[in-house]
Length: 232
Image (cartoon, rainbow, N blue to C red; front, side, top):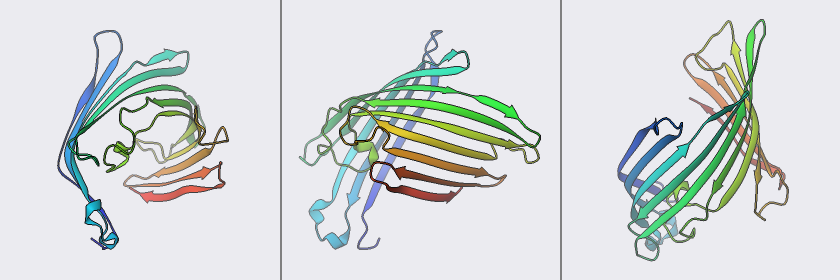
């Protein structure tokens, strides 16, 4: 570990992911996830402040219920979920319990057309994601990672995915995937523009590996949020 780096340890760590199952014959799918671990964060030595180190046991329970509907070429899926997280320690040196509700709505469709050399599938989609006001304020629990930084959210994401299947080089997955999307944050004064962020990604699949790139443009402040290239 370099003197200028911090490190997060998560030992031991256990998780249980229950396979989604149908609730009777009403079409509602239930999904449950459990994760527990002891987290220990050590700050950079260059900070010369051992009191900044922190640790806590974290036990999380996540539950989701969703119901897909088919409407003449459209797929509509409402979802509601509940999250509960217990921390054995906090900055106030007492235990803390986080609780919140998430509610989502997925709307998508699919159009396909075949050409002499490839098959093209277009998938427009719209995703609304909402998070209720969490029980704990952001400064109450220790922030080990993004799983601890919950905040009230109303997010709308719309986009189009383009899937290309080459007939001479058939794969289980599409040979090329091009995805373009835009984000709108509702009920907030953080952004002045209705669509403050746009994002694009390109995935090129090969028989033994995948090449991908992803970038985002901050429309609000006119700069690149990120640009990544990866091989998997």
